[in-house]
Amino acid sequence: MTSIRSSRGTPTPRTLWRAASDRVRGKGTESDAELFLQWLATTRRSWLVVLDELTDPEAMQGWWPPPSALGCGRVVATTRRQDAVLSGCGRAVVNIDTYSAEEAEAYLHERLSSAHADHLLDAQAAVLAEALGFLPLALSHAAAFMVNEDVTCAEYLRRFSDSAARLDDLLPREADAEGYGRQVAAALLLSLDGAQAGDPVGLAVPVMRLAAVLDPAGNPRSLWTSDAIIRYLSNQRITPAGGAPSTIGPAQVRATLRLLHRYGLLTDHTQAGSRAVRLHALTARAVRECTPDTVSADVVRTAVDALTELCDTVGWSDHDTRASLLSNIDSLDRYAGDLLWQTDGHYVLRWAGRNMTPDTAIPYWRGLVGASERRLGRAHPLTLVARRDLALACFNDRRGKEAFAVLQDDFPYQDSQLAGDSPRAIAAEREVVSAVSLLEDTVAVRERILGQVDPATLAGQAELALLYWSRGNRAAAIQTLERSLPGYRAAFGPRHPGTIAVKNRLRGWREQHKRRWWRRERGPSAPGGSAGAGGAVTRHSTVITASRRRP
Image (tube, rainbow, N blue to C red):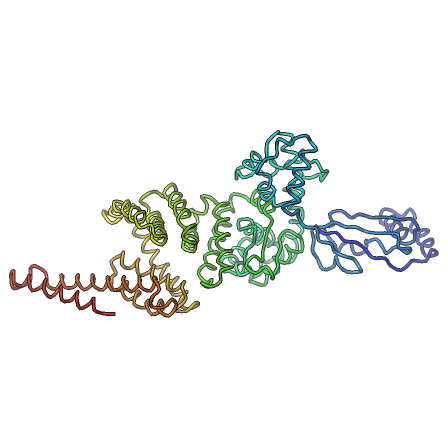
C-alpha cells in the first residue's frame, strides 16, 4: 500500500473562484466536482481529502485536488499502484509495508486480549503470523475468526495449512472486525483485471498463475526468460476480441513483470538478485484458488520445464541461485502435489536432492522414495533410481551399512526389471532408452555451455557412464568416464574423493571389460583341452595384473 501527500501551492484569486462558480453552478456532477476543487483551492478552512484505493493514477490527473492557496489543505491517497506518476507535482510517496514479525505478534496479543480470548494464544502465534505473511488485513480477519470459532492459534494454523481449505472460508467477510469491507482474496486480486488489460495485453493472468506455484520468497529473473515460459505465455495469452496474436519474447515477459509491479501484485527488484521476483504468499494462494483445474497441469508443467532449464545451466559456484532453485522446487512440490508427478517433475526433485548437504539429503531422499513408491510403485524404474540416490547419500554421510541395506533390498526388483517381456518390462525398457537419450542431450548442452571442467558437466558425464554400463554398453561407459577423468583432475585435483572414485571405477570397468573379452576369446571350448583352459586362466591373470599397474 502507498500513501501520497500533496504539497502546498500557489493561491488562486478569489475573483476567479466566484466567476467559475457562477458559470458551473447547477451544471451536473462534473461541474459540481469542478466547483468543489475550486473551493478547496481558495477556502480559508482546513481540509483533508482522502482518496482510498486509487486504482488508476493517470485517470485521476485532472481531478487531483489543487494546492491550497493558504496552505491549509492536504490530500492523502492510498493505492497498491507503484507508478512513477504518483510522485509527481510535489507529491510525496510513503511506502507502507506489512507488519514486522514483532508487530504482527503484538497485534494478535492485543486483539485477542481485548476480546477476553487470551486462552487462544499459544506458542504458535508467531508461526501463524508468518504463515499469513504479516499482512494486517489477513491478521485482522484471522483474529476475528479465532474469537468467533473459539479456536487457538495452533488449531487455526492447522486449518490454514490444509491445502483443501479455501482462503475466503478461513478469512471470511463476516470476520471483518476492522471494517475493511471485503474478503481477503478479493482485496488481494483487486487490481488484476486492470493489469490484464494493460500493455502487454493478456499476459498478467498467466504470469500470476506461474508465480503462484513458486516460492513466495522470490525467484531469479532468468527463470522468466526460459523457453518454457515463453512458449506457455504464447499459448495462454488472452487477446482482445478481433485482435491478432503477437509474438511473445523476453521483452514482453519483462514488461509484464514491471506491469504487475506497478499494480502492486508482485515485486520485481533487480537488487534482490536470485530473489528478484516475489509474490506475497496470500496473493499466491488466492491466485491458485482462482486458477481453473483445466489449466493447472499446464502451469505446473511449465514451471517444471523452466526450473529444469535453469538447473541445467546454473554454475556450481552460484550458491545464491542454487539456494533459490531449491526453495522454488520445494514450493512447487508442496503446491502441485500429484500434478508434479504427472508432468515429469521427477528430474527437478532428484536435482534438489543431489544439491543438498548430507544431513538434509538423507531425510529428503527418504521422503522422495516414499512418495515415489506410493505414486509409481515399488518396482518402477524411477523409484529404483531414487533409492539408488538414497544409498549414495548414505555413503556420502558415512552410513555404509544403511546404503548396502537399501541396495540389497532392491536386488529382487532389479531382477524383475531385467527378466521377461511383459508389457510392464517393455514399458520400463522404453523409459530407460528415453532416459539415455535425454541424459545424452543434457550432457551435450552442459559441455557446450558450461565447459568440460564444470562440476555440473562432470556429474552428468558420470551419470551417463553409469547408465551406459547398466544397459550393457560397456565400451561407451568406459569412453565417457575416460573423457570425464581429466575434468575431475582439473576441477578438484588428483586427490579429491570424487577424482579417486572416478579413477577407481574406471580401472575396475577396464578390468571387467578385458576379463569378458578374454573369456569370450579363450573359453573352455578352446583347443588344447585342460592345458588350454589352464593357459587361459594363467594369461587372464596376467592381463588383470598388468592392468592394475596402470595409473
